[in-house]
Image (cartoon, rainbow, N blue to C red; front, side, top):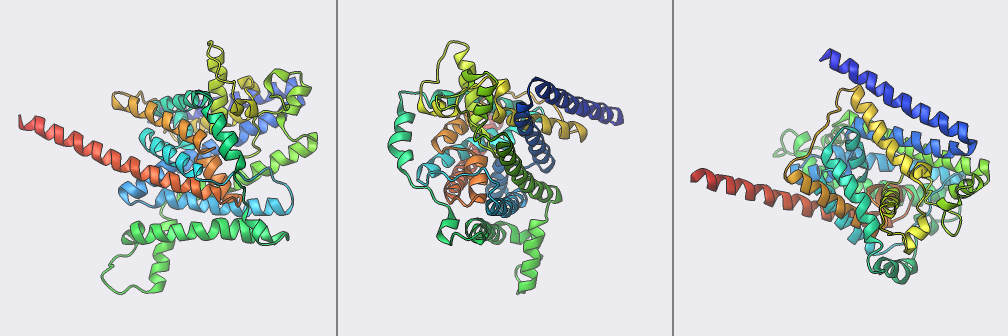
Length: 440
C-alpha cells in the first residue's frame, strides 16, 4: 500500500512537471501565450478542488433527491454565495469579464435535458472532467459524447440557427443590479444579495427542512427550539469539511480567474484572445470578426463542441457551417485557451487523485457504456439548447447577478429528479426480473 502511494505521488509530480514544461514551451514561442497558460493553470486549480471535494452537480442533486443527503448540495450553494460576493467586488472596481445572457424558457428546457443526462452518466460537465482525471471510463465515454453531440446538434437542418436568430437573440437580458441603482453597492445588493445569497439560503433551508433536519435533530417528536434548529442547519452546512472547503476555494478561484483574465486583456489592450492569435499569424483559427471563444471565466461545454467540430472536420464531416461555430470559432486545439482549461481540469484532478491514491482506471462494462454515451449525448444537446452547462449557464450566471441562471438551475433540478426516478424504476425492474428468475 505504501509503495503504491509513493508511486502515485511520483506520477502526480510527473503530470505537474509536464504541465510546467508545456507552459514553458508556450512562453518560449511567444509571450502572448501567457494568456493561454493562465487558462491551463486555473483549469488545474479547478480540477484539484473538484476532485478534493468530490464536487459535482449531478452527485449533489442525485444524492438530494435519491438519498436525502444534503452534503454536496450545501457545498455548491456555499460556492455560489462566495463567488457572488467576489463577482460583486470585481464589478465595483470594473475588473470583470462577465456578461449577462438571454432570459427565456429555453434555459429551463436545456437544463432539464442536461439534468437527465448528467444523472444518467453519473457526472455533470465539471464532474465528468474531474472523473476522467480519476480514470473513470464511463465519464470518458460521456465526455466523448458531449463533444460530438454538440457539434452535430447545432448543424442539423439549420434548426439551431433559426432557434438562435428568431428566438434567443430577441430575448431580454437582465442584471439584478440594474434594478437597484448605478452606485457600486448595487452590485452587492442586487447581484449578490438579492439574486444569489437570499435564493441560495432559501434553497438551503428547504433542503434542511425536507431532507437534512432528521439527520441533525436527534428527536423531532419533541418541541425543538430555534437555537437547536439553527445549530442543526449549520451542522448540515459543515457536514463534509472537504466539500465545504472545496466550495469556498472554488468560489475564490473563480473570482481570481475573472480578475486575472481582465488584467491580461488590459495589459495586451485586447478584448479577445483571437486578436493575439491574429498577431501571431493564426488567422485560420479565428472567426470573421477576428474572435474565438474566450469567456474570461470558468466555462466548459463550448470548448468541447469546438473540439468535436475540429475532429469531425478532419475526418471529412463538416459541421461548422452554422452561426454557432461562426461565433465561437474552431481553432486548432493546442491554440484554444478554453479547451486547455478543460484539459487542465482533467490534469488537475489526476494530480490530486494520484497524490491521494484515488486514481484507478475503471473500464465501463454493460449498461454503463450505454449510460455514459446516452447521458453525455443528452448533456451535449442540453448544453446547446440551454446555452451552457451547470457551470456556464448556472454557477457563473447566478453568481454574476443574472437571474437566467436560476432558470437553468430549475431545469437541472427537474431533469435530475426525472433521472433519479428513472433509475429507481430501472433498478426495481431489474430486481423484480432477478427475483422472477430465482423463483424458476
